[in-house]
Length: 449
Image (tube, rainbow, N blue to C red; front, side):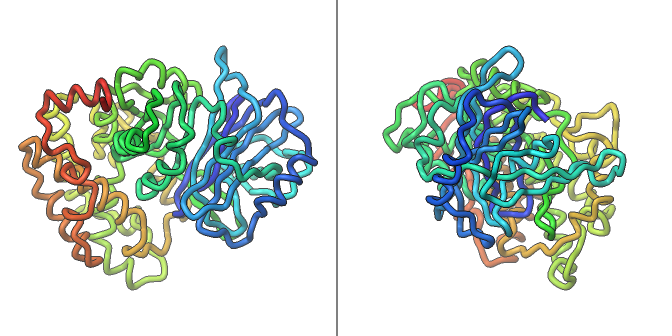
């Protein structure tokens, strides 16, 4: 948990989501004010397509304020006043999308705040379970939601760091929502991103907004989380290293100065593409879901990380990861490459983003024994259609053969009747295939002119 923070929060549309917040707002607002705003944006037990909202927390007394707006696109949150992280004052916003029963706030859940949190909330509390696989560390905390607003501009006003734990599939809608309200000096952090940092920067610029804004990609999510049937959120594990990069890179010092106050495990990488090419998702998930497609369709639930992880699948992982690393090296990005084998081998001397026990924690939790619909799940629509498409097309552009990635991309598309080379996040589709390496380097460093 963080000592002090101001955070805007919500949850993405899939089972896996993240967010974090805790802190001491200078003026958290009154209960009556919370009730007044709550009438404007009531919470539904079956969430509509999305929310826009924010939270701020203060210990003691512990109070959580959440601003939320129901929308068809995404969610943004607003806290009351900037508070202090260490020696710095950092205002943090979390923008995301919520579909849940009852509606709840993912970022608040991941914060692991000490209970109880009081404040006369008109909303039901959201339960948080931390480290469930270790009974000695397992805790459950209630987080009531107490304030709501329908004003997105108000939600983002004064925020320095804007955090989005959303899947990459939502970035276009999110960018459209926040573009008019971004201001000079703000930082948008979208772990893991899948090079969405460039795409959102392009979208904001195309909207006519010329504000100097930094966008951050990361190699993974800060937390691995699953929603539970009883309405709680369980945090299975969290990162110990969070490699991240900024677009444009010239704003790295400013952006990291804020991000590192919230995520102390952040490791600075050269630029946003460097971080995007460390993304675990397009390497770990495509072999797991495609080579387990039969069991996933046949059984009500199947754990791709337990019985779904066999030697033949791990061999494909290793071959796919070797192609990713070859692309990184061809583009001049050095170690650490965070090879996936270090994660599976539980190598304490290796380069891993999660602890060496994280895979065992996933299996032990049983939370990843689930029903995965390949037509709708983010492992297909994000990690293959976006991440793997980016990898394959970037390999073509850089002259690096990627037969395994190319094959998996084609099989994934065929499995659900799509052509991801035509519709996915390819180097061609994002408009960068015409650049030379020197021009790409200038773009990554200096940004969009």
